[in-house]
Image (cartoon, rainbow, N blue to C red):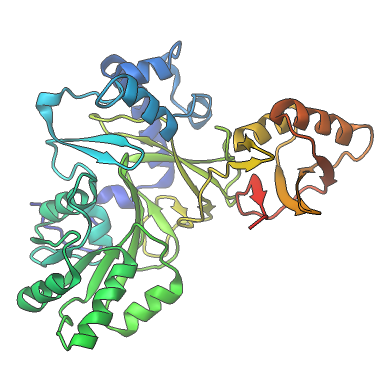
Length: 412
C-alpha cells in the first residue's frame, strides 16, 4: 500500500516538462533494447533498428507502427502473446482475452495497469471502499481497478457485471464512497436505486471509462451528488490519460510516450490537430512500441491548471479506423495516405456519398498549388491505389475540418 499525502500522487507529475522529455528519451533506448532482446515479436517489428539511436521524438517517429490487427495475426501464429511479451509465463499473474480476440498478459508487479495515479487525481484516498463495476470475466478491466485500488489502500467490492439488483443491495449494505465503471451504468444504478427506494447516496465520487463521457453526463451526475472523473485506458496498455480537478482535458500518464499521428500513417501531426493515438509503453513485461490504439484525439496547448505538468489530450474523439466498403471494395485510411504522400500532400480526405443511387467518391486534397494537372494526377493515383474511380477537388490549405477524418462515409 502507498498512502499518499498532498495534492499530487508523486513528484513525477510536477516535473519540468523539458526534464520529463529528456528523461523519457534517455530511458527509451534501454526500453527498445530490452524489448528487442526479450520479445521476438518486437525484434521482428524493429528489424534493423539500432536501439541506441532511438533517443529523440524524431527517431521514434521513424519506427514502424504496431496495430491491433498485427496483434491478432501474430498471436494466432505464435500463441499466446505473439512473441510481444518480454516476461515468461512463470512470472505472469494472469492472461486475458479481449474482443478481437487479443490476449493480454499481467505480471506480478504491483498496480501493473498504473491506475492508482488516476484514482488519486479523482480524489480517491486510502481506506475508501470502491464499488468496482468493471467486468471480471476474461477482459482485464476489473483487474485494472483492483491493482490501482490495492496500491492506494482502497478495498474493493468486486461487483463486476452482477445483476443491477444485487449491486444495489451491496451498495446499500456496504456504503462504498467511490465507484469505478462505465458512466452509463453508474447512471442506471442511480436511476434504479431511486425508483426502488434503495439508498446508494454513500457514493460521492467515481472514475469512469469505457464509454463517452460528455459534459452533460458529468453535470447530471454532479447534481446527484457524484463527482465523476474520466480516464482513458486500453486492455493492451493500461492507463493512458486521466482527468484531474481542473476538468481541462486528460493528462497523459507518466509511464508512456504518446504521439498523435495522421490516421493510416505513422506521421506525427501538429499539436492541436486531431489524429490517431500512438503509445509507447515503458512496461518491461509487455513493451509495446508505437502501438496504434485506433482512437482519435488531439494534444492540447499548455499544462493543466491543477499543477500537473505533463501534456494533455482532448479525450476520446472517435475511431481512427474509418475503413469502408465502396462498390464492393474496401477502402482504408492507409490508402488515402499513400495517395497523398505520392504527391507530397499532407492533408486530404475521401468523401463517400450517393449520387443517383450509386456510390460516389470524391478526394478532397489541401494544396496551395491549383495550377497544372495535379487533380488529374490525383485521380489516376486514386484509381491505381484503390481500384476505384472518383472525382478530385483541390481545396485551400486549412479548409478541411480538424476532426481526424480521412474517410468520410456520408451514405448513412
